[in-house]
Image (cartoon, rainbow, N blue to C red; front, top):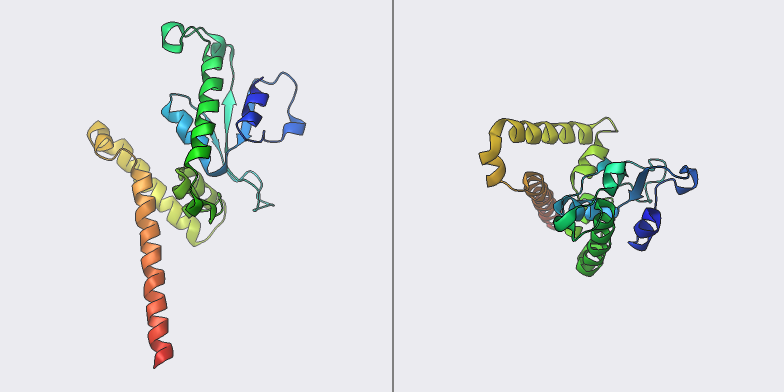
Length: 198
């Protein structure tokens, strides 16, 4: 039932052919982590999946994993309208998928869902991109490590007051980084045009 709901939401079950019958854990590919962000806002929590298919970069690299313990079958009473936690999750999954399809912009489709601009334009989970950078040595790993360390240090050391001031600090930082890259490209093109004209 959960697999059918995940697939009806337009997601693929990760390694479906190898999934054991009756398994209480389900993992789904989630392009740009859009549904994970929407579902977290509705109170659901997941384990993040990233770098799912490193040998095939064209495939969706991001997703989430959900463990369905017997606690998922509890009756939520008035909070869930008399439904179980699992029924509430499945209902929220369908609604979040419909919202994501309606909100997808033409500009976002110009970028791969695995790229940082694609994630930001779709309203996805940008941490997944940073975690993927940690897999390969080099400048990307150094930059991602620095950003993640500074971010989590700030979140842990700054307390409640700072987290209220910056509701989504990683998204703000990512937008600043994208703007910086675009500015650097514009400057490089301007210098190139000046050098070629002289």
